[in-house]
Length: 114
Length: 515
Image (cartoon, rainbow over all chains, first blue to last red; front, side, top):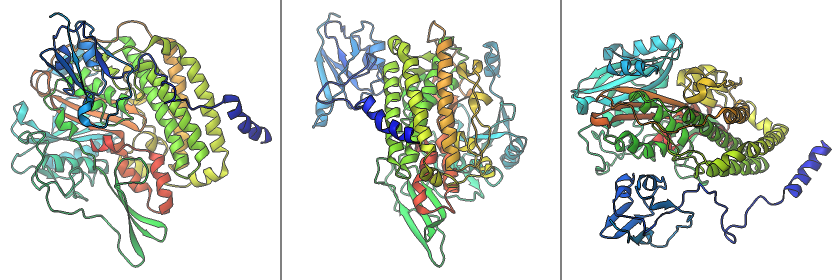
Protein backbone atom coordinates (compact mmCIF):
# COMPACT_ATOMS: atom_id res chain seq x y z
CA UNK A 1 0.00 0.00 0.00
CA UNK A 2 2.71 2.61 0.74
CA UNK A 3 4.07 2.09 -2.75
CA UNK A 4 0.63 2.69 -4.12
CA UNK A 5 0.42 6.00 -2.27
CA UNK A 6 3.88 6.94 -3.46
CA UNK A 7 2.89 6.04 -7.01
CA UNK A 8 -0.18 8.21 -6.78
CA UNK A 9 1.90 11.17 -5.62
CA UNK A 10 4.66 10.71 -8.18
CA UNK A 11 2.55 9.82 -11.20
CA UNK A 12 1.24 13.36 -11.86
CA UNK A 13 4.75 14.76 -11.34
CA UNK A 14 6.20 12.37 -13.88
CA UNK A 15 3.42 12.98 -16.36
CA UNK A 16 3.22 16.77 -16.14
CA UNK A 17 0.12 18.76 -17.02
CA UNK A 18 -2.40 17.00 -19.23
CA UNK A 19 -4.21 20.19 -20.19
CA UNK A 20 -3.23 22.24 -23.24
CA UNK A 21 -2.51 25.96 -23.62
CA UNK A 22 -5.60 26.63 -25.74
CA UNK A 23 -6.70 29.39 -26.45
CA UNK A 24 -3.30 31.02 -25.83
CA UNK A 25 -1.86 28.61 -28.35
CA UNK A 26 -3.67 27.23 -31.39
CA UNK A 27 -5.50 23.93 -30.86
CA UNK A 28 -3.66 20.77 -31.79
CA UNK A 29 -5.89 19.59 -34.64
CA UNK A 30 -5.28 16.34 -36.49
CA UNK A 31 -4.89 16.53 -40.29
CA UNK A 32 -8.22 14.71 -40.71
CA UNK A 33 -10.12 17.35 -38.69
CA UNK A 34 -13.28 18.57 -40.38
CA UNK A 35 -13.62 22.30 -39.86
CA UNK A 36 -15.39 24.98 -41.87
CA UNK A 37 -15.74 24.11 -45.59
CA UNK A 38 -13.89 26.68 -47.68
CA UNK A 39 -14.11 27.28 -51.40
CA UNK A 40 -11.09 27.60 -53.65
CA UNK A 41 -12.56 30.41 -55.72
CA UNK A 42 -10.17 29.85 -58.63
CA UNK A 43 -11.14 26.19 -59.03
CA UNK A 44 -14.92 26.50 -58.68
CA UNK A 45 -16.77 26.31 -61.99
CA UNK A 46 -20.25 26.83 -60.60
CA UNK A 47 -21.40 23.25 -61.22
CA UNK A 48 -23.46 23.43 -57.99
CA UNK A 49 -22.69 19.78 -57.20
CA UNK A 50 -22.05 20.92 -53.61
CA UNK A 51 -25.49 22.54 -53.41
CA UNK A 52 -27.35 19.36 -54.36
CA UNK A 53 -25.12 17.10 -52.26
CA UNK A 54 -25.54 19.04 -49.01
CA UNK A 55 -27.84 17.05 -46.68
CA UNK A 56 -28.92 20.15 -44.75
CA UNK A 57 -29.22 22.63 -47.63
CA UNK A 58 -26.50 24.78 -46.12
CA UNK A 59 -24.94 25.77 -49.45
CA UNK A 60 -26.42 28.00 -52.11
CA UNK A 61 -25.11 29.46 -55.33
CA UNK A 62 -26.50 32.68 -56.69
CA UNK A 63 -24.80 34.22 -59.67
CA UNK A 64 -21.13 34.10 -58.80
CA UNK A 65 -21.74 34.16 -55.02
CA UNK A 66 -21.16 30.85 -53.23
CA UNK A 67 -22.77 31.01 -49.83
CA UNK A 68 -22.46 28.65 -46.87
CA UNK A 69 -24.62 28.77 -43.76
CA UNK A 70 -22.21 27.54 -41.09
CA UNK A 71 -25.16 27.29 -38.70
CA UNK A 72 -26.77 24.61 -40.88
CA UNK A 73 -23.53 22.85 -41.86
CA UNK A 74 -22.96 19.52 -40.13
CA UNK A 75 -19.35 19.22 -41.34
CA UNK A 76 -19.98 15.89 -43.06
CA UNK A 77 -17.83 16.72 -46.08
CA UNK A 78 -20.39 15.63 -48.68
CA UNK A 79 -19.77 18.86 -50.61
CA UNK A 80 -16.03 18.28 -50.79
CA UNK A 81 -16.55 14.73 -52.05
CA UNK A 82 -19.19 15.79 -54.58
CA UNK A 83 -17.19 18.62 -56.14
CA UNK A 84 -15.89 17.52 -59.57
CA UNK A 85 -13.04 20.08 -59.41
CA UNK A 86 -11.95 19.49 -55.80
CA UNK A 87 -12.66 23.13 -55.08
CA UNK A 88 -13.99 22.57 -51.54
CA UNK A 89 -11.87 21.56 -48.59
CA UNK A 90 -12.83 21.13 -44.94
CA UNK A 91 -10.41 23.52 -43.33
CA UNK A 92 -8.97 23.72 -39.84
CA UNK A 93 -11.17 26.70 -38.95
CA UNK A 94 -13.11 25.61 -35.88
CA UNK A 95 -13.66 28.88 -34.03
CA UNK A 96 -16.99 29.73 -35.60
CA UNK A 97 -18.91 31.49 -32.84
CA UNK A 98 -20.56 34.77 -33.80
CA UNK A 99 -22.79 37.21 -31.98
CA UNK A 100 -25.35 37.58 -34.75
CA UNK A 101 -26.94 34.51 -36.42
CA UNK A 102 -26.70 36.21 -39.82
CA UNK A 103 -22.90 36.31 -39.52
CA UNK A 104 -22.83 32.51 -39.78
CA UNK A 105 -23.49 32.86 -43.51
CA UNK A 106 -20.16 33.03 -45.27
CA UNK A 107 -20.02 34.24 -48.86
CA UNK A 108 -17.29 33.68 -51.42
CA UNK A 109 -17.24 35.02 -54.96
CA UNK A 110 -16.03 32.32 -57.31
CA UNK A 111 -14.06 33.44 -60.30
CA UNK A 112 -13.19 30.19 -62.05
CA UNK A 113 -14.35 29.63 -65.59
CA UNK A 114 -17.47 27.65 -66.25
CA UNK B 1 -39.84 -13.45 -52.34
CA UNK B 2 -37.74 -11.35 -54.68
CA UNK B 3 -35.76 -10.09 -51.75
CA UNK B 4 -34.99 -13.54 -50.36
CA UNK B 5 -33.76 -14.88 -53.69
CA UNK B 6 -31.65 -11.81 -54.33
CA UNK B 7 -30.07 -12.08 -50.92
CA UNK B 8 -29.47 -15.79 -51.37
CA UNK B 9 -27.79 -15.04 -54.74
CA UNK B 10 -25.52 -12.53 -53.04
CA UNK B 11 -24.61 -15.11 -50.39
CA UNK B 12 -26.20 -13.13 -47.59
CA UNK B 13 -28.54 -14.49 -44.95
CA UNK B 14 -32.05 -13.84 -46.14
CA UNK B 15 -34.17 -12.00 -43.67
CA UNK B 16 -36.91 -14.26 -42.42
CA UNK B 17 -39.96 -13.84 -44.61
CA UNK B 18 -42.96 -12.25 -43.04
CA UNK B 19 -45.82 -14.34 -41.69
CA UNK B 20 -49.27 -12.81 -41.79
CA UNK B 21 -51.17 -13.42 -38.58
CA UNK B 22 -54.60 -12.62 -37.27
CA UNK B 23 -54.37 -9.53 -35.00
CA UNK B 24 -56.24 -11.51 -32.34
CA UNK B 25 -53.48 -14.16 -32.33
CA UNK B 26 -50.45 -11.84 -32.46
CA UNK B 27 -49.79 -11.93 -28.70
CA UNK B 28 -49.95 -15.71 -28.47
CA UNK B 29 -47.71 -16.17 -31.48
CA UNK B 30 -45.05 -13.77 -30.20
CA UNK B 31 -45.25 -15.23 -26.68
CA UNK B 32 -44.80 -18.75 -28.11
CA UNK B 33 -41.63 -17.69 -29.95
CA UNK B 34 -40.28 -16.04 -26.79
CA UNK B 35 -41.12 -19.16 -24.76
CA UNK B 36 -39.00 -21.19 -27.22
CA UNK B 37 -35.98 -19.08 -26.32
CA UNK B 38 -36.59 -16.20 -28.73
CA UNK B 39 -35.91 -12.57 -27.87
CA UNK B 40 -38.40 -9.85 -28.62
CA UNK B 41 -36.73 -7.40 -31.02
CA UNK B 42 -39.28 -4.76 -31.91
CA UNK B 43 -42.89 -4.00 -32.70
CA UNK B 44 -43.29 -1.60 -35.59
CA UNK B 45 -46.37 0.40 -36.50
CA UNK B 46 -46.95 0.68 -40.25
CA UNK B 47 -49.00 2.61 -42.75
CA UNK B 48 -49.08 0.67 -46.04
CA UNK B 49 -50.82 3.29 -48.13
CA UNK B 50 -47.71 4.67 -49.84
CA UNK B 51 -46.65 1.24 -51.13
CA UNK B 52 -49.98 0.16 -52.55
CA UNK B 53 -51.59 -1.17 -49.37
CA UNK B 54 -54.87 -0.06 -47.90
CA UNK B 55 -54.48 0.15 -44.17
CA UNK B 56 -52.30 0.10 -41.12
CA UNK B 57 -50.43 -2.82 -39.61
CA UNK B 58 -48.24 -3.82 -36.73
CA UNK B 59 -45.31 -6.11 -37.16
CA UNK B 60 -43.56 -7.89 -34.30
CA UNK B 61 -40.03 -9.20 -34.79
CA UNK B 62 -38.51 -11.92 -32.65
CA UNK B 63 -34.92 -13.14 -32.81
CA UNK B 64 -35.19 -16.90 -32.47
CA UNK B 65 -32.75 -18.94 -30.41
CA UNK B 66 -30.86 -19.91 -33.61
CA UNK B 67 -30.33 -16.21 -34.44
CA UNK B 68 -32.84 -16.11 -37.31
CA UNK B 69 -35.57 -13.49 -37.28
CA UNK B 70 -39.29 -14.21 -37.23
CA UNK B 71 -41.50 -11.41 -38.53
CA UNK B 72 -45.18 -11.55 -37.60
CA UNK B 73 -47.41 -9.05 -39.29
CA UNK B 74 -51.00 -8.24 -38.41
CA UNK B 75 -52.94 -6.10 -40.89
CA UNK B 76 -55.35 -3.58 -39.36
CA UNK B 77 -58.36 -1.65 -40.56
CA UNK B 78 -57.65 2.01 -41.40
CA UNK B 79 -60.81 3.28 -39.68
CA UNK B 80 -60.56 1.24 -36.51
CA UNK B 81 -56.97 0.11 -36.10
CA UNK B 82 -57.00 -1.98 -32.92
CA UNK B 83 -55.68 -5.32 -31.77
CA UNK B 84 -55.37 -7.03 -28.37
CA UNK B 85 -52.28 -5.72 -26.59
CA UNK B 86 -49.41 -8.19 -26.42
CA UNK B 87 -47.69 -6.49 -23.47
CA UNK B 88 -49.23 -8.64 -20.75
CA UNK B 89 -47.81 -11.70 -22.57
CA UNK B 90 -44.59 -10.03 -23.77
CA UNK B 91 -43.77 -7.15 -21.39
CA UNK B 92 -40.76 -6.09 -23.51
CA UNK B 93 -43.26 -4.78 -26.09
CA UNK B 94 -45.00 -2.33 -23.75
CA UNK B 95 -43.25 0.84 -24.93
CA UNK B 96 -43.35 -0.20 -28.59
CA UNK B 97 -47.11 -0.58 -28.36
CA UNK B 98 -47.53 2.82 -26.72
CA UNK B 99 -45.32 4.36 -29.40
CA UNK B 100 -47.40 2.85 -32.23
CA UNK B 101 -50.51 4.12 -30.45
CA UNK B 102 -49.19 7.69 -30.35
CA UNK B 103 -47.59 7.82 -33.79
CA UNK B 104 -50.14 5.79 -35.78
CA UNK B 105 -53.28 5.76 -33.65
CA UNK B 106 -53.10 1.96 -33.44
CA UNK B 107 -54.88 0.90 -30.25
CA UNK B 108 -53.35 -1.92 -28.20
CA UNK B 109 -56.57 -2.93 -26.47
CA UNK B 110 -56.03 -3.90 -22.84
CA UNK B 111 -52.54 -2.36 -22.55
CA UNK B 112 -51.58 -2.19 -18.85
CA UNK B 113 -50.38 1.45 -19.12
CA UNK B 114 -52.13 3.16 -22.05
CA UNK B 115 -50.89 6.69 -21.25
CA UNK B 116 -49.16 8.85 -23.85
CA UNK B 117 -45.49 8.00 -24.35
CA UNK B 118 -43.81 9.66 -27.33
CA UNK B 119 -46.26 12.48 -27.97
CA UNK B 120 -46.91 14.22 -24.68
CA UNK B 121 -50.38 15.40 -23.66
CA UNK B 122 -49.89 18.79 -25.30
CA UNK B 123 -50.17 17.16 -28.73
CA UNK B 124 -53.82 17.18 -29.85
CA UNK B 125 -55.97 14.06 -29.88
CA UNK B 126 -56.18 12.33 -33.24
CA UNK B 127 -52.79 13.65 -34.41
CA UNK B 128 -50.72 10.64 -35.50
CA UNK B 129 -47.70 11.98 -37.38
CA UNK B 130 -46.38 8.76 -38.90
CA UNK B 131 -49.58 8.21 -40.86
CA UNK B 132 -48.97 8.88 -44.53
CA UNK B 133 -51.74 11.49 -44.79
CA UNK B 134 -50.09 13.68 -42.14
CA UNK B 135 -47.57 16.09 -43.70
CA UNK B 136 -44.09 16.39 -42.19
CA UNK B 137 -43.02 19.73 -40.77
CA UNK B 138 -46.49 20.96 -39.87
CA UNK B 139 -46.97 21.41 -36.14
CA UNK B 140 -50.58 21.34 -34.90
CA UNK B 141 -51.65 23.82 -32.21
CA UNK B 142 -50.97 22.49 -28.69
CA UNK B 143 -53.80 20.96 -26.68
CA UNK B 144 -54.70 22.03 -23.14
CA UNK B 145 -54.12 18.79 -21.33
CA UNK B 146 -51.85 17.80 -18.52
CA UNK B 147 -49.58 14.92 -17.71
CA UNK B 148 -50.96 12.48 -15.16
CA UNK B 149 -48.07 10.90 -13.31
CA UNK B 150 -48.30 7.38 -11.98
CA UNK B 151 -47.95 7.90 -8.23
CA UNK B 152 -48.25 5.81 -5.09
CA UNK B 153 -50.49 7.40 -2.47
CA UNK B 154 -50.90 6.61 1.22
CA UNK B 155 -50.00 7.81 4.68
CA UNK B 156 -46.40 9.02 4.80
CA UNK B 157 -45.87 8.65 1.05
CA UNK B 158 -44.64 11.78 -0.64
CA UNK B 159 -43.95 12.62 -4.26
CA UNK B 160 -40.57 13.89 -5.39
CA UNK B 161 -40.58 15.38 -8.90
CA UNK B 162 -37.12 15.69 -10.50
CA UNK B 163 -36.49 17.25 -13.91
CA UNK B 164 -37.00 17.52 -16.84
CA UNK B 165 -34.44 20.30 -16.40
CA UNK B 166 -31.48 19.10 -14.35
CA UNK B 167 -28.61 20.83 -12.59
CA UNK B 168 -26.00 19.02 -14.67
CA UNK B 169 -25.51 19.14 -18.41
CA UNK B 170 -27.69 16.15 -19.16
CA UNK B 171 -30.64 15.52 -21.38
CA UNK B 172 -34.27 16.13 -20.34
CA UNK B 173 -36.21 13.49 -18.42
CA UNK B 174 -38.81 13.80 -15.69
CA UNK B 175 -38.48 11.37 -12.80
CA UNK B 176 -41.38 11.14 -10.37
CA UNK B 177 -40.45 9.32 -7.19
CA UNK B 178 -43.05 8.11 -4.72
CA UNK B 179 -41.14 7.58 -1.49
CA UNK B 180 -41.53 6.85 2.20
CA UNK B 181 -38.70 8.60 3.96
CA UNK B 182 -35.72 8.01 1.72
CA UNK B 183 -36.95 4.68 0.38
CA UNK B 184 -38.37 4.75 -3.17
CA UNK B 185 -41.67 2.91 -3.61
CA UNK B 186 -42.13 3.70 -7.28
CA UNK B 187 -40.38 5.58 -10.06
CA UNK B 188 -42.30 6.94 -13.02
CA UNK B 189 -39.81 7.96 -15.72
CA UNK B 190 -41.15 10.29 -18.36
CA UNK B 191 -38.97 10.74 -21.40
CA UNK B 192 -39.45 11.79 -25.05
CA UNK B 193 -39.03 15.50 -24.34
CA UNK B 194 -36.71 15.70 -27.36
CA UNK B 195 -38.80 13.74 -29.85
CA UNK B 196 -37.80 15.27 -33.19
CA UNK B 197 -39.72 13.03 -35.57
CA UNK B 198 -36.57 11.61 -37.15
CA UNK B 199 -38.45 8.58 -38.48
CA UNK B 200 -40.84 10.93 -40.33
CA UNK B 201 -38.02 13.10 -41.67
CA UNK B 202 -36.27 10.18 -43.41
CA UNK B 203 -39.41 8.96 -45.20
CA UNK B 204 -39.10 9.60 -48.92
CA UNK B 205 -35.34 10.17 -48.70
CA UNK B 206 -32.85 8.07 -50.63
CA UNK B 207 -30.79 5.59 -48.58
CA UNK B 208 -27.62 7.72 -48.56
CA UNK B 209 -29.56 10.90 -47.76
CA UNK B 210 -31.10 9.39 -44.62
CA UNK B 211 -27.73 8.45 -43.15
CA UNK B 212 -26.83 11.83 -41.59
CA UNK B 213 -30.18 11.80 -39.75
CA UNK B 214 -29.93 8.22 -38.47
CA UNK B 215 -26.29 8.67 -37.54
CA UNK B 216 -27.13 11.72 -35.44
CA UNK B 217 -30.09 10.23 -33.56
CA UNK B 218 -27.79 10.70 -30.59
CA UNK B 219 -24.21 11.81 -30.11
CA UNK B 220 -22.59 8.76 -28.53
CA UNK B 221 -23.91 5.74 -30.49
CA UNK B 222 -23.18 7.18 -33.93
CA UNK B 223 -21.18 4.20 -35.23
CA UNK B 224 -23.73 1.75 -33.82
CA UNK B 225 -26.65 3.46 -35.51
CA UNK B 226 -24.83 4.10 -38.78
CA UNK B 227 -23.73 0.46 -38.80
CA UNK B 228 -27.19 -0.92 -38.06
CA UNK B 229 -28.61 1.30 -40.78
CA UNK B 230 -25.90 0.37 -43.28
CA UNK B 231 -26.48 -3.33 -42.53
CA UNK B 232 -30.21 -2.90 -43.19
CA UNK B 233 -29.64 -1.03 -46.46
CA UNK B 234 -27.06 -3.55 -47.63
CA UNK B 235 -29.43 -6.45 -46.95
CA UNK B 236 -32.21 -4.62 -48.75
CA UNK B 237 -30.07 -3.92 -51.80
CA UNK B 238 -28.08 -7.21 -51.72
CA UNK B 239 -24.86 -5.22 -51.48
CA UNK B 240 -21.65 -6.84 -50.38
CA UNK B 241 -19.13 -4.46 -48.84
CA UNK B 242 -15.37 -4.68 -49.46
CA UNK B 243 -13.51 -6.70 -46.79
CA UNK B 244 -11.52 -3.72 -45.51
CA UNK B 245 -14.74 -1.80 -44.83
CA UNK B 246 -16.02 -4.65 -42.65
CA UNK B 247 -12.83 -4.64 -40.58
CA UNK B 248 -12.70 -0.87 -40.22
CA UNK B 249 -16.35 -0.95 -39.11
CA UNK B 250 -15.38 -3.30 -36.28
CA UNK B 251 -12.45 -1.06 -35.37
CA UNK B 252 -14.75 1.98 -35.19
CA UNK B 253 -17.44 0.10 -33.27
CA UNK B 254 -14.90 -1.02 -30.68
CA UNK B 255 -13.44 2.49 -30.39
CA UNK B 256 -16.97 3.71 -29.75
CA UNK B 257 -17.52 1.04 -27.09
CA UNK B 258 -14.15 1.85 -25.52
CA UNK B 259 -14.65 5.59 -25.12
CA UNK B 260 -18.24 5.12 -23.94
CA UNK B 261 -17.34 2.48 -21.37
CA UNK B 262 -14.37 4.53 -20.16
CA UNK B 263 -16.53 7.62 -19.75
CA UNK B 264 -19.38 5.63 -18.21
CA UNK B 265 -17.10 4.04 -15.62
CA UNK B 266 -16.05 7.57 -14.69
CA UNK B 267 -19.66 8.74 -14.59
CA UNK B 268 -20.50 5.94 -12.16
CA UNK B 269 -17.87 7.45 -9.85
CA UNK B 270 -19.55 10.85 -10.36
CA UNK B 271 -22.80 9.24 -9.17
CA UNK B 272 -21.32 8.98 -5.69
CA UNK B 273 -19.08 12.04 -5.81
CA UNK B 274 -15.82 10.06 -6.14
CA UNK B 275 -14.06 12.78 -8.09
CA UNK B 276 -10.67 11.07 -8.39
CA UNK B 277 -12.19 8.28 -10.44
CA UNK B 278 -14.30 10.66 -12.52
CA UNK B 279 -11.30 12.85 -13.33
CA UNK B 280 -8.92 9.99 -14.18
CA UNK B 281 -11.41 8.24 -16.43
CA UNK B 282 -12.61 11.54 -17.89
CA UNK B 283 -9.06 12.31 -19.01
CA UNK B 284 -8.74 8.83 -20.54
CA UNK B 285 -12.01 9.31 -22.38
CA UNK B 286 -10.70 12.63 -23.70
CA UNK B 287 -7.58 10.86 -25.00
CA UNK B 288 -9.79 8.29 -26.72
CA UNK B 289 -11.88 11.06 -28.31
CA UNK B 290 -8.65 12.57 -29.65
CA UNK B 291 -7.69 9.17 -31.04
CA UNK B 292 -11.07 9.13 -32.82
CA UNK B 293 -10.47 12.64 -34.12
CA UNK B 294 -7.06 11.71 -35.49
CA UNK B 295 -8.36 8.61 -37.26
CA UNK B 296 -11.58 9.99 -38.70
CA UNK B 297 -11.62 13.76 -38.27
CA UNK B 298 -14.50 13.49 -35.82
CA UNK B 299 -14.29 12.96 -32.07
CA UNK B 300 -17.60 11.07 -32.04
CA UNK B 301 -16.86 9.12 -35.23
CA UNK B 302 -19.58 10.43 -37.53
CA UNK B 303 -19.20 10.57 -41.29
CA UNK B 304 -17.22 7.38 -41.85
CA UNK B 305 -19.63 4.42 -41.94
CA UNK B 306 -22.10 4.53 -44.84
CA UNK B 307 -24.27 2.06 -46.76
CA UNK B 308 -21.93 0.19 -49.11
CA UNK B 309 -18.89 0.47 -46.87
CA UNK B 310 -17.10 3.59 -45.70
CA UNK B 311 -17.16 7.21 -46.80
CA UNK B 312 -13.46 7.70 -46.19
CA UNK B 313 -10.56 5.59 -45.03
CA UNK B 314 -8.79 6.13 -41.72
CA UNK B 315 -5.92 8.59 -41.55
CA UNK B 316 -2.82 6.43 -42.24
CA UNK B 317 -0.51 8.30 -39.85
CA UNK B 318 -3.01 8.09 -36.99
CA UNK B 319 -3.57 4.41 -37.77
CA UNK B 320 0.17 3.72 -37.55
CA UNK B 321 0.34 5.37 -34.13
CA UNK B 322 -2.77 3.64 -32.84
CA UNK B 323 -1.25 0.51 -31.22
CA UNK B 324 1.19 2.51 -29.11
CA UNK B 325 -1.44 5.04 -28.06
CA UNK B 326 -3.93 2.36 -27.11
CA UNK B 327 -1.27 0.46 -25.14
CA UNK B 328 -0.60 3.58 -23.09
CA UNK B 329 -4.30 4.31 -22.59
CA UNK B 330 -4.97 0.65 -21.77
CA UNK B 331 -2.44 0.49 -18.95
CA UNK B 332 -3.70 3.80 -17.53
CA UNK B 333 -7.25 2.47 -17.75
CA UNK B 334 -6.33 -0.72 -15.90
CA UNK B 335 -4.62 1.32 -13.17
CA UNK B 336 -7.61 3.64 -12.80
CA UNK B 337 -10.05 0.73 -12.56
CA UNK B 338 -7.82 -1.03 -10.00
CA UNK B 339 -7.73 2.03 -7.79
CA UNK B 340 -11.53 2.34 -7.92
CA UNK B 341 -12.03 -1.34 -7.11
CA UNK B 342 -9.63 -0.98 -4.16
CA UNK B 343 -11.65 1.88 -2.69
CA UNK B 344 -13.88 0.33 -0.05
CA UNK B 345 -16.06 3.42 0.14
CA UNK B 346 -16.84 3.18 -3.57
CA UNK B 347 -17.51 -0.53 -3.60
CA UNK B 348 -19.77 -0.28 -0.54
CA UNK B 349 -21.99 2.07 -2.53
CA UNK B 350 -21.83 -0.09 -5.70
CA UNK B 351 -22.61 -3.46 -4.14
CA UNK B 352 -26.27 -4.36 -3.74
CA UNK B 353 -27.50 -1.07 -5.26
CA UNK B 354 -29.98 -0.94 -8.14
CA UNK B 355 -30.41 -4.68 -8.51
CA UNK B 356 -32.01 -6.00 -11.69
CA UNK B 357 -32.92 -9.68 -11.53
CA UNK B 358 -32.29 -11.90 -14.53
CA UNK B 359 -36.04 -12.59 -14.57
CA UNK B 360 -37.03 -8.93 -14.87
CA UNK B 361 -34.20 -8.27 -17.34
CA UNK B 362 -35.56 -11.09 -19.49
CA UNK B 363 -39.18 -10.07 -19.33
CA UNK B 364 -38.54 -6.34 -19.86
CA UNK B 365 -36.16 -7.11 -22.73
CA UNK B 366 -32.97 -5.69 -21.23
CA UNK B 367 -30.01 -5.55 -23.62
CA UNK B 368 -26.29 -4.95 -23.53
CA UNK B 369 -24.42 -4.27 -20.31
CA UNK B 370 -27.71 -4.24 -18.40
CA UNK B 371 -28.55 -7.78 -19.50
CA UNK B 372 -25.04 -9.18 -19.25
CA UNK B 373 -24.68 -7.85 -15.69
CA UNK B 374 -27.54 -10.15 -14.71
CA UNK B 375 -25.84 -13.14 -16.34
CA UNK B 376 -27.84 -13.13 -19.59
CA UNK B 377 -25.51 -14.02 -22.50
CA UNK B 378 -26.85 -11.43 -24.97
CA UNK B 379 -24.30 -10.01 -27.39
CA UNK B 380 -25.13 -9.53 -31.07
CA UNK B 381 -21.44 -9.65 -31.96
CA UNK B 382 -21.65 -13.32 -30.96
CA UNK B 383 -25.33 -14.20 -31.51
CA UNK B 384 -25.75 -12.61 -34.92
CA UNK B 385 -22.31 -11.50 -36.07
CA UNK B 386 -22.03 -8.74 -38.64
CA UNK B 387 -19.16 -7.00 -40.47
CA UNK B 388 -15.82 -8.61 -39.53
CA UNK B 389 -17.16 -9.98 -36.23
CA UNK B 390 -17.88 -13.08 -38.30
CA UNK B 391 -14.11 -13.67 -38.38
CA UNK B 392 -13.29 -12.60 -34.83
CA UNK B 393 -13.64 -14.35 -31.51
CA UNK B 394 -15.48 -11.96 -29.23
CA UNK B 395 -15.22 -12.97 -25.60
CA UNK B 396 -18.57 -12.78 -23.84
CA UNK B 397 -18.33 -10.72 -20.68
CA UNK B 398 -20.98 -11.27 -18.06
CA UNK B 399 -21.47 -10.97 -14.35
CA UNK B 400 -24.06 -12.02 -11.85
CA UNK B 401 -25.82 -9.94 -9.28
CA UNK B 402 -27.36 -7.35 -11.60
CA UNK B 403 -26.34 -4.49 -9.30
CA UNK B 404 -24.28 -1.35 -9.93
CA UNK B 405 -21.08 -3.28 -9.12
CA UNK B 406 -21.94 -5.93 -11.72
CA UNK B 407 -22.50 -3.27 -14.38
CA UNK B 408 -19.16 -1.69 -13.41
CA UNK B 409 -17.36 -5.05 -13.76
CA UNK B 410 -18.97 -5.80 -17.13
CA UNK B 411 -17.99 -2.40 -18.53
CA UNK B 412 -14.46 -2.63 -17.18
CA UNK B 413 -13.88 -6.07 -18.69
CA UNK B 414 -15.54 -5.14 -21.96
CA UNK B 415 -13.26 -2.11 -22.27
CA UNK B 416 -10.26 -4.46 -22.04
CA UNK B 417 -11.90 -6.86 -24.46
CA UNK B 418 -12.40 -3.95 -26.89
CA UNK B 419 -8.70 -3.12 -26.66
CA UNK B 420 -7.87 -6.76 -27.41
CA UNK B 421 -10.25 -6.81 -30.38
CA UNK B 422 -8.78 -3.60 -31.77
CA UNK B 423 -5.27 -5.08 -31.62
CA UNK B 424 -6.61 -8.17 -33.37
CA UNK B 425 -8.23 -6.03 -36.08
CA UNK B 426 -5.04 -4.01 -36.57
CA UNK B 427 -3.05 -7.21 -37.05
CA UNK B 428 -5.44 -8.49 -39.68
CA UNK B 429 -6.73 -5.29 -41.35
CA UNK B 430 -6.82 -6.05 -45.09
CA UNK B 431 -5.89 -3.46 -47.71
CA UNK B 432 -8.20 -2.63 -50.57
CA UNK B 433 -11.31 -0.68 -51.46
CA UNK B 434 -13.72 0.71 -48.89
CA UNK B 435 -16.88 1.45 -50.84
CA UNK B 436 -19.17 -0.65 -53.03
CA UNK B 437 -22.12 0.82 -54.93
CA UNK B 438 -25.55 -0.36 -53.77
CA UNK B 439 -26.14 -3.43 -55.96
CA UNK B 440 -29.87 -3.25 -56.62
CA UNK B 441 -32.87 -1.02 -56.09
CA UNK B 442 -35.31 -2.80 -53.80
CA UNK B 443 -38.96 -3.15 -54.75
CA UNK B 444 -41.42 -0.98 -52.84
CA UNK B 445 -42.42 -2.91 -49.74
CA UNK B 446 -39.20 -4.93 -49.34
CA UNK B 447 -38.12 -5.08 -45.71
CA UNK B 448 -34.78 -5.70 -44.07
CA UNK B 449 -33.46 -5.38 -40.56
CA UNK B 450 -30.01 -4.32 -39.48
CA UNK B 451 -28.52 -4.38 -36.02
CA UNK B 452 -25.34 -3.60 -34.17
CA UNK B 453 -24.21 -4.18 -30.61
CA UNK B 454 -23.39 -0.75 -29.28
CA UNK B 455 -22.05 0.35 -25.89
CA UNK B 456 -25.56 0.17 -24.43
CA UNK B 457 -26.68 -2.98 -26.20
CA UNK B 458 -28.24 -3.94 -29.50
CA UNK B 459 -29.74 -1.18 -31.64
CA UNK B 460 -32.06 -2.33 -34.40
CA UNK B 461 -33.12 -0.67 -37.64
CA UNK B 462 -36.30 -1.93 -39.28
CA UNK B 463 -36.32 -0.62 -42.83
CA UNK B 464 -38.92 -0.80 -45.60
CA UNK B 465 -38.25 0.44 -49.11
CA UNK B 466 -40.64 2.76 -50.87
CA UNK B 467 -40.77 3.54 -54.58
CA UNK B 468 -37.57 4.24 -56.56
CA UNK B 469 -35.07 3.41 -53.85
CA UNK B 470 -36.50 5.67 -51.19
CA UNK B 471 -37.42 4.92 -47.59
CA UNK B 472 -41.06 4.15 -46.84
CA UNK B 473 -40.60 3.44 -43.14
CA UNK B 474 -37.63 3.34 -40.84
CA UNK B 475 -37.77 2.47 -37.18
CA UNK B 476 -34.76 2.84 -34.94
CA UNK B 477 -35.11 0.87 -31.72
CA UNK B 478 -32.04 1.91 -29.83
CA UNK B 479 -30.57 -0.06 -26.93
CA UNK B 480 -31.46 2.85 -24.65
CA UNK B 481 -35.13 2.56 -25.66
CA UNK B 482 -35.02 -1.10 -24.63
CA UNK B 483 -33.28 -0.45 -21.32
CA UNK B 484 -35.08 2.61 -19.91
CA UNK B 485 -37.99 0.60 -18.46
CA UNK B 486 -35.38 -1.57 -16.70
CA UNK B 487 -33.99 1.54 -14.95
CA UNK B 488 -37.44 2.35 -13.61
CA UNK B 489 -37.73 -1.24 -12.36
CA UNK B 490 -34.29 -1.20 -10.70
CA UNK B 491 -34.91 1.84 -8.49
CA UNK B 492 -37.80 0.89 -6.12
CA UNK B 493 -36.48 -0.32 -2.76
CA UNK B 494 -33.39 1.85 -3.05
CA UNK B 495 -32.74 5.22 -1.41
CA UNK B 496 -33.56 8.41 -3.30
CA UNK B 497 -29.91 9.61 -3.08
CA UNK B 498 -28.79 6.39 -4.79
CA UNK B 499 -30.82 7.25 -7.90
CA UNK B 500 -28.04 9.26 -9.57
CA UNK B 501 -25.70 6.31 -9.12
CA UNK B 502 -28.24 3.77 -10.37
CA UNK B 503 -29.10 5.95 -13.35
CA UNK B 504 -25.43 6.42 -14.24
CA UNK B 505 -24.79 2.69 -13.90
CA UNK B 506 -27.08 2.25 -16.92
CA UNK B 507 -25.93 5.52 -18.57
CA UNK B 508 -28.63 5.49 -21.24
CA UNK B 509 -29.19 8.03 -23.98
CA UNK B 510 -32.29 10.15 -24.07
CA UNK B 511 -31.85 11.44 -27.61
CA UNK B 512 -31.86 8.08 -29.42
CA UNK B 513 -34.73 6.90 -27.21
CA UNK B 514 -36.79 9.98 -28.05
CA UNK B 515 -35.68 10.26 -31.70
